[in-house]
Length: 243
Image (cartoon, rainbow, N blue to C red):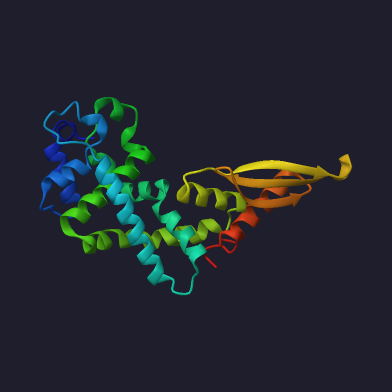
């Protein structure tokens, strides 16, 4: 990290715009978008952190992703489209987008946050990426946001289709639940029958207290996979997005 850039937020802002090949009409927007909350006390002239822009950018990315998928896959139903959108807007995906544009090098952050690895942390990178999109939307409109985001999406869909070939039902359900509901599925054994040498287990998968699926199997793990598959079917994701 360039120490000059770290000490002068205005240099950081100019360098990032050069990296993107975009000049913001309102420089205060991109300055705020790059400002992590840890830096505000260290740079008294900063006007605030990027959390409001992060909120806006999250909504813009979600809309652009939905619009992209709707037109890219006219034959797909709501369930698979929802799964693909969740994949495109999840923290890990946005962090990859951020790394592709060297965003971590340009975040204005406090010394403590930087020393603890903040520039490479997925949470920081993804939230700052959202803030940058929010700033771009306010400064140049929806068309600019679409043009900025679209080149990221197609390669990520190819990654998704490759990854999903090897993912089991529990992994796929967990990705969906964390992206769409901000919750992690819980698997609860609700029954068992048969002799010890031939037991059969009944497992429910619950998300935020609600039962999404039920499965039966010769082991708890097998029953949990069956419950996850049952849940995927109920939410329209029984087929893999690549199919």
